[in-house]
Image 1: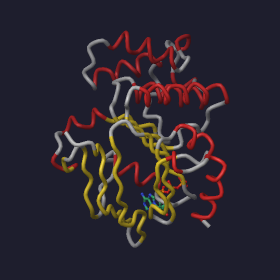
Image 2: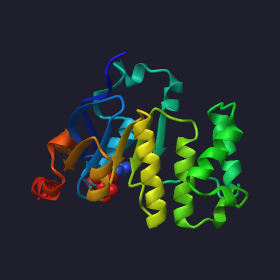
Image 3: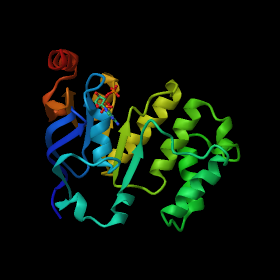
Length: 235
Ligand SMILES: Nc1ncnc2c1ncn2[C@@H]1O[C@H](COP(=O)(O)OP(=O)(O)OP(=O)(O)O)[C@@H](O)[C@H]1O
């Protein structure tokens, strides 16, 4: 086992003539929390999609634990929890039925206990029998967080997870992410919220026009300087 849990080697992603990612390289060790910032269109979501195998890179290699993505067994995807713009929930099922469905896909044996625990964490226990079609946007997002963490994944990828969450729900999510980080999960989060992203992270990346233009340990970046660094890198 290598300490480099995730390694990207010159990842390029083209959509026609547009290069959404241009030779992106970095690595993360197990248990790190990387926050990725950058303006609209910088390639942040594309990077997460490539990492979660939702789209293939045009060139370059991704390694997990030293093994090429293409050489990993199919069930390797179980190691991922992905929170993206799509909730991946069935509107005509209750919250609990949705989670049971995912529990079955992941072959979880203790699904009842896990569902109770995770619904408690996202504060939806009292709505577990309600149809998802009647959920507000923030409740959908909370259930989507519950769905993505139900199988206790090693690697958590989040694309703007605070979108649609009110202050209390944002607080709940931050606490869940801190807990996951304390349990040595490896986390990559794309966010426009400099403050929150900085506070949670152990590493910081800034992207611009498909390139990583800044990548460093948070300990090297005083918080009071971070906004200036960000603005200088993206302008
Ligand atoms: N499926 C696609 N087909 C064609 N172009 C795409 C596709 N997905 C993304 N792009 C383009 O790739 C570039 C990077 O998009 P991406 O969504 O990765 O940016 P982003 O940094 O996540 O932006 P935002 O902050 O607005 O979410 C953009 O120019 C976008 O228009």
